[in-house]
Length: 453
Image (tube, rainbow, N blue to C red):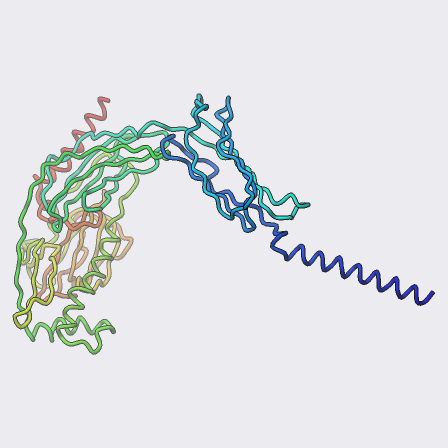
């Protein structure tokens, strides 16, 4: 009896161990993997019936079968179905417009079922099912220009007002021939927008088109008809002196550890190229934003930041630097230098929001102010700042004093104007007639047209 009892115990233990081993095998074996197949497509999509819809099926063990069916509410059509003798881990399906479906309600449902080759679930495998809601949209966005500036000058600005609507509008912007995308701000009434655009001095040609896309991929385009005025800018040859290299450049370069061990000429190249690029990237990034609240006008007055000032360096000056008879570096002067008395008060000619007021390398102490519509003004080389980031400045408020911080040899103001991150001619924004002809009048004309529609 005792021998039989021990034998039964051993058999029971062996059975338990066998079941445990089998369970361990099932739970760890790739053949019994438990992860369901993945169906990669959004739950809700917009379709213009032109470009095929893309569906991607993936599974760790391999896809054994799948079925794709589309319904327009009245009819059903099997788009694709297959049972694979050699299961695949990834399958991509391109769904074209079904021949038998008519989409009377501009709606459809896509049903996707997938089964993998796993032995899990009593050898039936893992299964996935997804229903996708499809909105059929074959109509382009309604896009047209209401009014725009007559002309744009190389290095200058222009304005455009346009209408853009669509039930499924996705995005729109002003596309240029040099890759820059200008954004627009809502204007006056729903569906209308206004945007400032700019022609960089580094580009020989200029073209701007408003481009709009809806969620289904339909595209509309409207060309902004501008008369192009070419303009030549000054070119300057500057011979670097030892006193300059070992004076202002040396003191500025010492602020940056990476210049340690550099020769005076290497330090100049660092300041004029590497540091300048870093400083301008900050300016461009901060001045690229456009407010999105609706406006009805743009009350901007000519900018006169420095009273009784004389220009000492022009905008757009292409400077070539020579050392010991060799060209060693070059840069563009992207502002207007103004000088009067030492530590002269700088005033804000227009209200705005301070987006930066701190030290910025070659620009020294530098406030940057947003005036709305993507228009920004910059004040470089200041000796003292009386504003900080986040402040709202008033018209005629003193914001700083002139100085020689940064890469400046004498006390002056570097005054810059930017449109969505592009430096433009300050002279235009200091001209009352130019502002009236190219900005305020265009807005007034646009509102008259909008009111009659």
